[in-house]
Picture 1: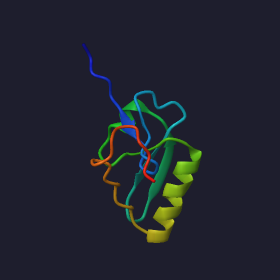
Picture 2: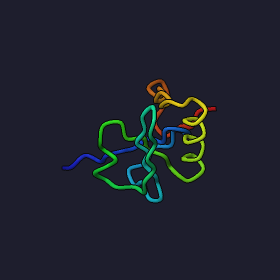
Picture 3: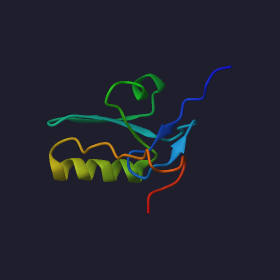
Picture 4: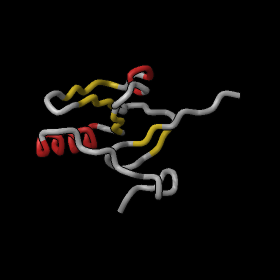
Length: 85
């Protein structure tokens, strides 16, 4: 039996195994690349997963503010599928 791959949104923490309409972001200190969901690219090192246009815009805005890659949030203490307050 194959295991189901889940992805978590970098902004709101939503979790899904079916990332329809999600976006991917690859970024570094001087470059940011936004792309439509692609399964192979989603598993690439450093790929950031965003559940929709709004959260992608938030991520991009934070990147511009910091002028470097924002750290990945730590959702390890949150139950699966719960959004942060």
